[in-house]
Length: 624
Image (cartoon, rainbow, N blue to C red; front, side, top):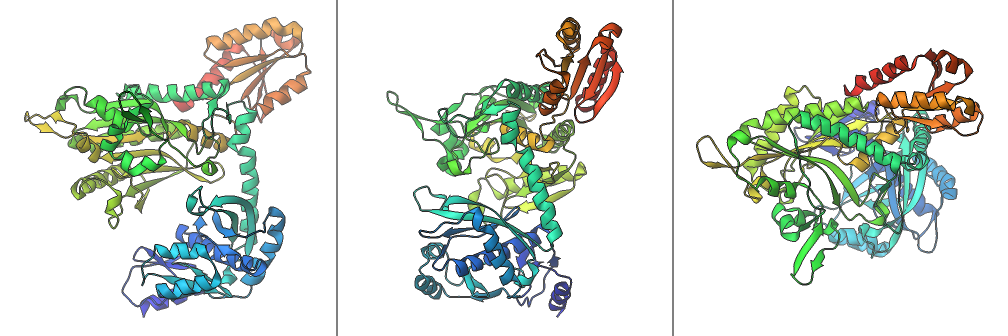
């Protein structure tokens, strides 16, 4: 039949899997039904995910051969590669063992073992893992229904798995194990800690070599490393894990980001508001956040005398709903746009914390727009313009726009009526289309109260980061009973738009640091210029230049250390200061400055006025 013929041709073209009616399937499975078929290659996200899933099973096969009696948790594909959680008993695995495990995986891959899928009854599956003595697979089986259980076997290894997988192991050519870490079973700190082994594979050695080069570049750009070197932020065990503290240079950088966005928001008609860091439990019960995220919140704060219960604020939107509700509104008042750089708190397990990208306290550049139904699309499109303006100013030219919709087969995850969800999803799709955005649709990625438009930026190394987000919400206005008086003198319900171009200040700064490698855009750099005197006898002219630059709103520092000029230049390069002005006898006599640019070298001599115009022109190019 046509499906079988297409798959057969796909196998000849080194296709990895097939997407049938939107669901990924093994090529080895018999697909005897009419369908919409897409053959997946290495260039498809689903194709790479299937490839890495199969590679995780290859890793498990190698480990079982090398470490008899090993027990297995889960081994999924991730964004870049895969991992497997294992229980080694009294044994350990370190990076010193990686090379021999890799060689075993390569040997097994060459055996050309087929990934064989088998449907199995639940009791037979239980018996199999009881005989094997693998309590983790038995734990996973507890949550599965009879008739839905499948095993996959390749070579001498059999695993509980729903698939899909690539046709055989021979397609796995280049293998690298990356690191080893601890991971609690099912993420529960009360459970046993397993060993998590991370790896990545490629169809060609050249691709692995390029990836490893990118990893080395990523290490150089690691925001934790650069944040310390550039004196931007720090953490303290006494303050608490996951609670960043901003140092003077970092606080100034963050303040400039806030000022930049506040200026753009005021111009666009946003109204600044400020809300408390805590809220009564009833507030989050009403919004639905307590039901959905109560387990991710810090322990409640109790007031013994009054018997009240408060939570550290996990979201700003319920507070903004109450601000809207504090006075009556007419249809003529709308849209109303409240904006706040509001700090929120969420409990993250210590093992999941990572620099600024995963913290327990972070500040969102939050805004909530309350508008009439007929205003939703226009307001949504204006927010898109604001997000694109931010990306341009911060030099993120490449991004993917994802429309995140509700999963229609799992509606209990969400609140609100089907009618409201359909209206909200329609508004987002139409707005994105009218703005000419190239979008992908992801079902099941919506917020619990509404669909989203998520912006995934690509950094200088090609990595994807989810930053800006815009959401349409018909549900919170209902839960908070928000109203406005319409032109018919009747009460109507507003629609709410949530938006955050940065996402969170902490995560955004982390991504920005890694994107530019600490070489911040000139308008944002903590130091735009440093002035270096060849000797102390030119200090008077050096300070005169400093004052002139400051009068032109240029951030300038002076290096008066008793060091040779070569050392001062090297130190300024390490600090990644965009421009250096060298002052010696010739410059002092001519009332000029000798200009050096970070990473480029000597640009010649200019007057202070011409240099100031050069700086301000470059700044205006990005932020006007």
